[in-house]
Image (cartoon, rainbow over all chains, first blue to last red; front, side, top):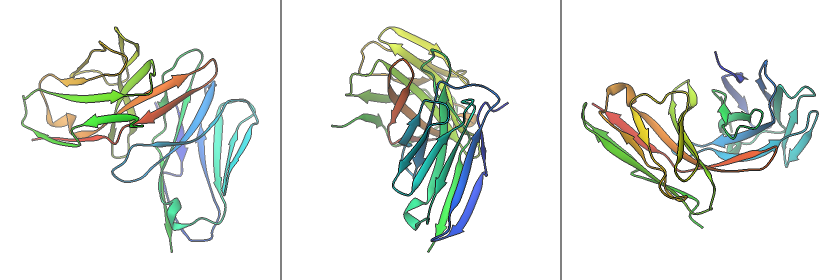
Amino acid sequence: TQLLEQSPQFLSIQEGENLTVYCNSSSVFSSLQWYRQEPGEGPVLLVTVVTGGEVKKLKRLTFQFGDARKDSSLHITAAQPGDTGLYLCAGTQGGSEKLVFGKGTKLTVNP
Amino acid sequence: NAGVTQTPKFQVLKTGQSMTLQCAQDMNHEYMSWYRQDPGMGLRLIHYSVGAGITDQGEVPNGYNVSRSTTEDFPLRLLSAAPSQTSVYFCASSYSNLMNTEAFFGQGTRLTVV
């Protein structure tokens, strides 16, 4: 059973469109992170959210942590081909330093 | 600032061979971990360490050993390689405070076992 469920698994859109990807769990997390991974590279941290209901913006990317700290979403406005990649959510629970990852959403933005 | 350095980047092994994947970090992080990434499976934790001399198993530890003699280095050993260990391996180094852990990853080692 996957602790963090990401949806959709694949997403292919045209440049300029908006999109939202989701990261859901039945468990509470101390923090959730979003990473982006490009082919042949390791994941790179985009943002960390730690407070229930928290919203963070990074240029055209908006990240939200659910009020109950069980879920998170990533919204991209006016997607660009440079946004193409694998988006991974990951979380920590309680006092543990272990990061649990979702399976990822593979995003393709076509010019 | 190098961050997390993994070697080698690519490796082909024959079934039954052993090898060590190297990982070094220069950020003075206490927490280090190894993941494997397979298509459709995301990142799965193999082993982790909360500091020099301390290691523990993750989700998929069978067939792998680790040690942590220094803060900087965290090598992963494959004892007797099997085709099921064909994967991309990532080492990560993390810092942690009371509420948050953030990981920095190496570029990965693509391992093929034939």
